[in-house]
Amino acid sequence: HLRDVIRISEKEKIKITEMCVPTNGELYSSDTACSGDIVILPNDVLQLNSILGNEILLPQRKFIENPLPMIQTTIAVKKSEQREILLGALTEISDCDPLLKYYVDTTTHEIILSFLGNVQMEVICAILEEKYHVEAEIKEPTVIYMERPLRKAEYTIHIEVPPNPFWAS
Image 1 (spheres, rainbow, N blue to C red):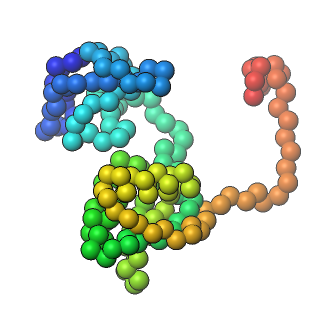
Image 2 (image 1 turned 180 degrees about the vertical axis):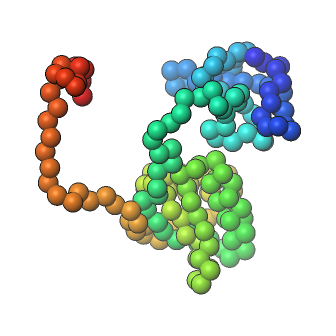
Image 3 (image 1 turned 60 degrees about the vertical axis):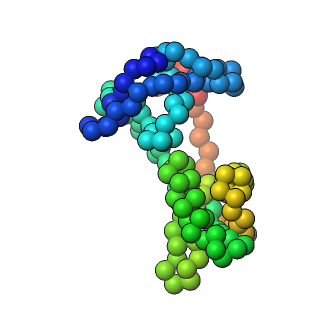
């Protein structure tokens, strides 16, 4: 509820002063949110995918939450004095985007980005320009992870036949 105080860690609490909920692709101000709802709270402490409430009560996920990055490239600033700004921006962006990884190569001192796809790379470039005013050059990405089938295989599952009682499979 609006104006509630929520504990986000053992030592830290926040007061909800404003809350928005997404509905049909639009954001609307709201006074309440129900369990399991996605809410947007203006706050410097919370990050993307922060969980409010008791995390133990959530259903356990049996799939990989953060898939491995599949593409890698180097990124450099056009103006050398912006390198520290770029590193700070990448730290901030990667805190909000768990699918983005970056590191500085200890030998070449190049900044290496690992990510899932070209769309993510384009979004990161746009954020760097619009929010941080950093002009960056990105080299042609290379694929670092690709699954290849070992052999040709076929399998058929029949519907409504034990052990598959479902219409769709």
